[in-house]
Image 1: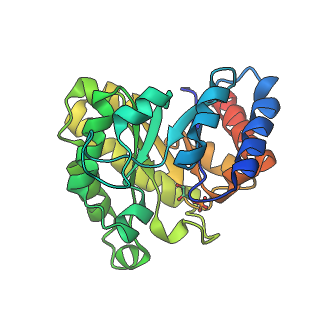
Image 2 (image 1 turned 45 degrees about the vertical axis):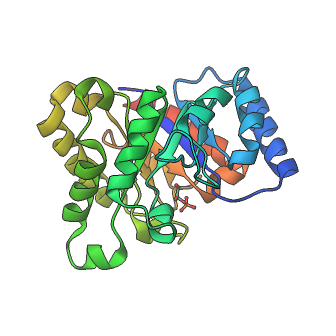
Length: 258
Ligand code: 13P
């Protein structure tokens, strides 16, 4: 069984002091584990350097929540992949549904961001997922297929190997309503089948497909117990060190059991 990947997406939360406390609590809390699970923490930009500094001597990596589709220039307010790389960031979430919704990010722009990250050898964590209306209209597979194809399938095999996919049904994000393990598994299998058709069986097996959307300390174990769920992209529950560590423990337990 391959090891799991657990990523905390802090979104736009916490003061500098709270961020510092949480990072230190994670460093301490994870220090005694001989982890198989890979752990990534994605704080807001102003706290990234705290995270990259601590990550060097901790059981976690630092990730960003977004990057620009451009490398440099007159793009006020943007942060580029080369800047993230220079800070020591190793992962970057792109195409989160909140960015698609509030900042009008299209699949085309997300594909460009993936390319900028690839150029810096940063690992893109590419999000996909349907809205409630789309699921009710039975369009969820169609929507996710289009998102995956248009954001990722331009990549060459050797680049695609470094991509992480996160399935985050929009109706489950921050709502307390989690997809059932069966719903998540069904979509993860579907995504893996798309990857298999395009890049072959080995890459499909090796690709990390995470679940995100109200994944918490209580339900993580039931989700992670499924071999098609390679870990989680955790929002709210990543803001409390105890809950986040319990989720990481669920990843460890399910890796050993499988
Ligand atoms: P919640 O875990 O708060 O539902 O957020 C999920 C998410 O959007 C992670 O990227």
